[in-house]
Length: 357
Image (cartoon, rainbow, N blue to C red; front, side, top):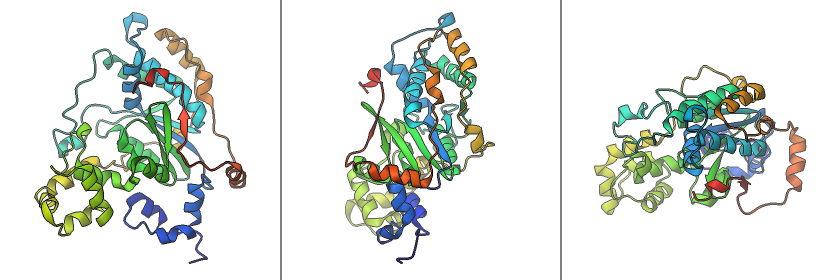
């Protein structure tokens, strides 16, 4: 065992939680290096943006404003301000913004009332969905959408395809937390900025690891997406079951005593459906490669587009920040001189208008 450089099942353990194999961790060089921030397989740094999440947050955070023709622009402006602050901090080499193309996806065929409890978008926001796409196109920032899949599915698919890339997903939605592993991190928005969640940081912040996200939603439900789970099973009970039985398959297969066991039996099919609804699909058909996501801002066309919209205070030069290319040895030396932190690091942003969230 001492001669094993990297446990062959470690990545699978991180992704599925089927076998956490803690006894392997001291011998897994890859896992140890990744946990220290040393990514010796790094080909680049990929930043994936949850476009709908950004747009909605910006709409409610910034006061009403209009451009030429009296078209509302506050959500577009706010989204650009977020990118203006985020990109220089992350310094990605590759970037994509992912959107929901509509209110329905393949999940509505599984369960017609999926997200059926959500209200429609405010009238002032509706024209800005197309407007932000026009701005991104002018800036030469790739955006992705599909009538079949949600933005989270597109994010998941690109993140999984980006082998060898350190990938960060910027969102304020917890659904993407299930994607976190040794090379995929979530920049999770909370009051005051973004917290960069690794598997260890997520467990510290939320009290459970990434591979518990889906079974937790399957058992306890998720009211924001109208996923019902099993009535009478709350988050605490669900987490206790997951910790005891490891995964949802075993929970549904074993005899669980008492009222909880009766509920699990009665609502087994609802739990399985909730699991399907909660699971991000990571194999969507996307006819593109990682080269298509290279960050190459067109400042000239972008400036012209913003000027036509009456948006003048966005500094597009900040969008061109690129990640530094470092050898593994350079990265290791930098990491060794950094003081260890017991608390998660917040990526502080100038989001004063968002502090109320």
